[in-house]
Length: 220
Image 1 (cartoon, one colour):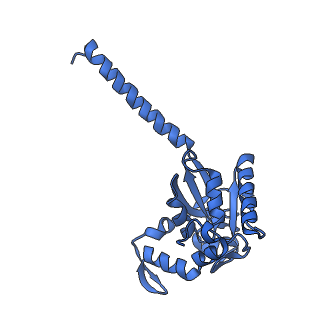
Image 2 (tube, rainbow, N blue to C red):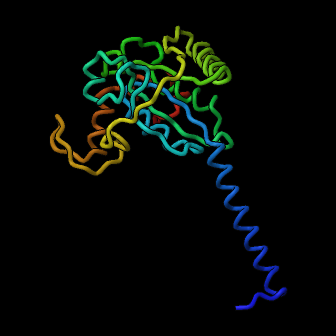
Image 3 (tube, rainbow, N blue to C red):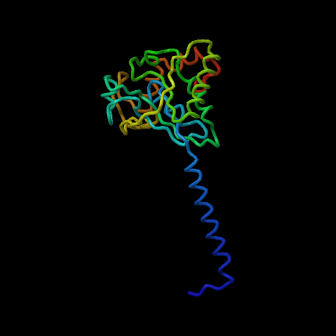
């Protein structure tokens, strides 16, 4: 096969275009940032934030404790020091960290130091985790704005990030899962079980009571 000068230019342009697309993809990947928050049941936090424009993914897991690779059972039984948390990966060109934090504070009860809604205990407490001075400042500003908007003390701590451990596979995307599970309401698909749990736990009712029209994930 012979390559002529006539054919070389289109081929060269094609290579340049391909390289440009590849570099753009790499740049977008490098630009992604993460935000880790604890807001009670991680199923609910994950479900809320995965659908925010600019969020790439949300992963349920554990952080802030002392036990390596903790299981869900270990964390909920207590003693590991972990929070149920969600690591949110987002594109800062589409949604800012400050916006996500403002949404977070208005999607929980940040006045409750004992857990969230029907879920009680240390693993269900709220928290925001930061890496570096800039992230800490943004988190503290969001907390102050929430306090001013609510007119009440915010007990959600802003903590230095620790290692994040993803929860077991069956916890990921639980809110839209199709697997059949046994619940107190009888056998249900995961998505239906999740909805029943969220309603029974009073999460949206309490958030609406606290934040009114400012609550980003409650249907008003």
